[in-house]
Length: 131
Ligand code: THU
Image 1: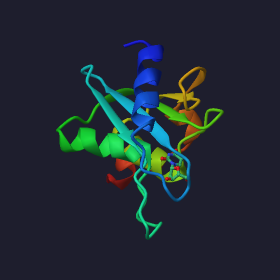
Image 2: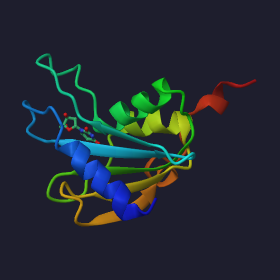
Image 3: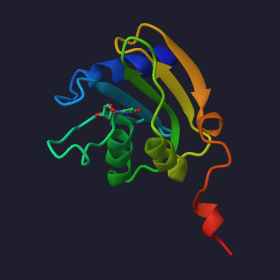
């Protein structure tokens, strides 16, 4: 799947965001190595702290469907591209330490490409618990 389709899926998912408190809708589209697409949006809560980011919604949907290997994620938010929060970087690192990360504006008109190793250098992951 090319970058523009992944970005378009993230921008579409963003339209389903439940973000009445922040007013900051975010969408994500996570592509598995097998070519399956999982989308997510941020889901806020009146208690604030229970909010879940778009990236983790997409990731947990995929893992709960038995999919654990991923190629790329696109994130769509705001007037300009924004970057996944620290918690989402860590959650993504668990399954896809080499993930391609596409950062797009909310409408999916422009984007830049980076990677999880760039966003989360010297990450703590499953292998750190071995031995
Ligand atoms: N948010 C995401 O969904 N993903 C990010 O990468 C950054 C932040 C959400 C959480 C909250 O609902 C809103 O954006 C403002 O922080």
